[in-house]
Length: 70
Image 1 (cartoon, rainbow, N blue to C red):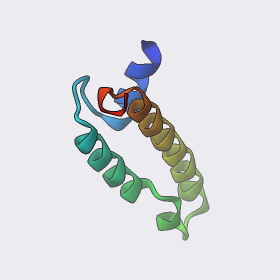
Image 2: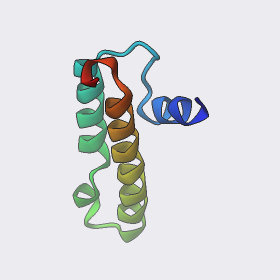
Image 3: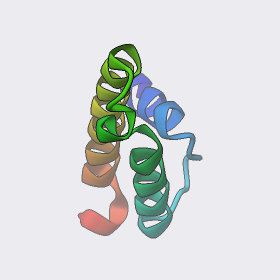
């Protein structure tokens, strides 16, 4: 349960988020934190890589447990 809560917190979604809305949130966060966006600053690019990995992991986990996918 703690893992579910932490993934929801990363994406900033509520407990009863629809799969469609989850996908929209995921895409918007990836647009914001994509590492290619920070090609000028190495430090920011590294931070964006870590953040995007967390976003991707959280999204895939929440999709896997969503009622619509079962």
